[in-house]
Length: 149
Ligand code: RB5
Figure 1: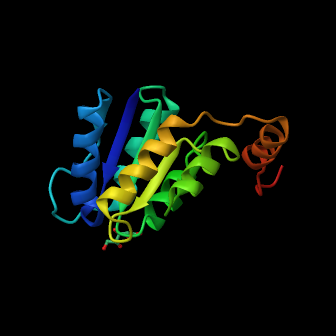
Figure 2: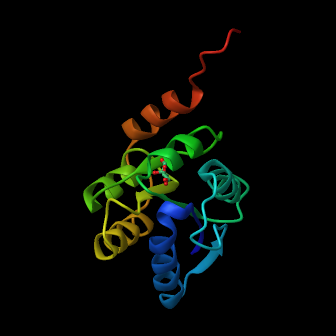
C-alpha cells in the first residue's frame, strides 16, 4: 500500500515512529514533512497529504499534530477527503467501514506509540463502506453545500 504521511512539530516524533514501522512492513511511504521538530504551520502539511490522496498518489493518508484536531479540520476542507481523528482502534475500524475515511488523524500528544500503531494498522487493514446505508450516508455528506445556488 502507498501511504502519505505528514505531521507538524507536535506530531513529529510519532510520525517518525509510524513511518519506520510502515516501511518495515513493506509499505511505500510518502513523507510530506515536516522534516524536523522545528515549528511549522499544520495546514500546509495537511493539504499536501490530502492532495496525494485525492490525486491518487497515495491509497490513504495519515496526519499527526499535537491533538489531531487541526489536521482533521484542515484535511476535511479538501474535496474528496474524509478525515477521521481517532483515539482508539474501534474508531479507526468504524471510520473505514461506516464513514469511508481516507485520512487518519492522530494526536501525537494524545496517544502513545503502541496505541497509535494499533490504530494505524486497524485503519489500513479495513476496507471502506461495506453496506448500502453507509454509502448513502457518505453521499449525503459529500454532496452537501451551504453555498447559494
Ligand atoms: C502545535 O502546538 C499544536 O497546536 C498543533 O500540533 C495541533 O495540536 C493543532 O491542532
